[in-house]
Length: 113
Length: 112
Image 1 (cartoon, chains in turn brown, cyan):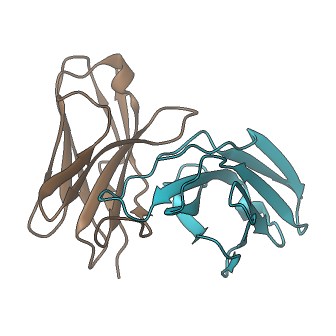
Image 2: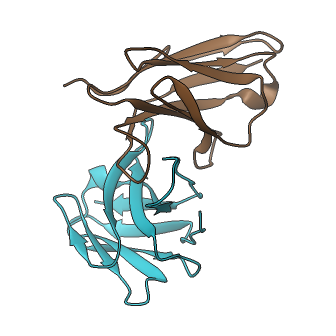
């Protein structure tokens, strides 16, 4: 059984560019959530996908968007990058929504210059 | 989701027990108490969760106050590998979303 994998692990972009981050969920999981973690802070919820539909969103602007594919893998897209978007982006998978355990990947470290 | 309060940091000696406190005075009847930890350069990992009764698993124990307004995560014998940020999180069992609301957590340092 493979865990949650994310790619790329590190990347550098410049302000105004667009970025796509990818996540493969753990085998058997149909729900993926994305979190942003700034340095020294706890992770902040961006949005969640359940069976290919967005199932909840945190306080992030529309330039943060996502997709979930039929195999339950997911993408996070961020348009018009700003300096404050520099952070660790974490993907978590689970089976179903609600109070179950989340399994996190190791994250993608984005630096915006 | 209700909020939790944790100390910013704690220190422990290796092979000694560690008690990590969490206050959640506004907890509702349907909120589960979850603990996650985040080791350096890794994503968070689940530790334990409970509703009313104390819980034990291979990683830790969770002691929940009778009024449920506080809880304590217990690591029975701290190892250097337990050095991490520990997050106490309330999750509504009846919620339609599975998102976690993280605070800043408690940074645990373990001295050899």
